[in-house]
Image 1 (cartoon, rainbow, N blue to C red):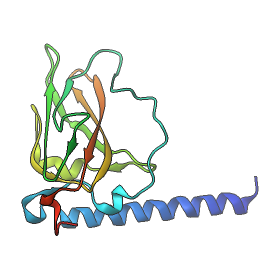
Image 2 (cartoon, rainbow, N blue to C red; image 1 turned 60 degrees about the vertical axis):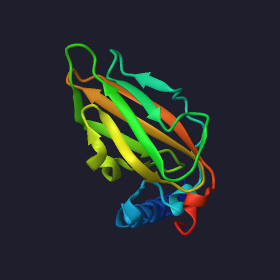
Image 3 (tube, one colour; image 1 turned 45 degrees about the horizontal axis):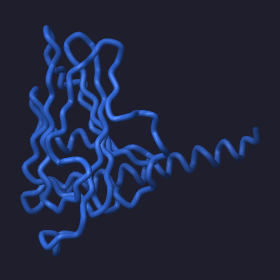
Length: 171
């Protein structure tokens, strides 16, 4: 393979990584503006979507990990901002949820780790965000959590948001 092509490919990858980090830094600096958690920024929402993934709705490693139940936002509904996010973690018998394994990712062509944006809303029983702000559109979130026995579960869900009167002046 031509060394120039390898160098060019790594330059593009580095530029994409830097752009992703800049968008993440901006999202963190905008967090909690107006009392709402800025979960996804408009810039992140406009990034290229990921290719189709083979993860169906839920995947577990070998033995079952904690159950992940998405209470809100309800699937297959259009929501307006602010949207509450309520996710319940249920450990398997004889285990406890291991919060150090929590990963929450905004699924895009280059995934965006949004775990730290949610940390103050996370407990061993789940995630509870009273009001989260996301731009209009479809947003796929992937959650992964493990337990004290080393078993993990991953779950994806999609949030659909439409423009609404509550959004005026927010974006």
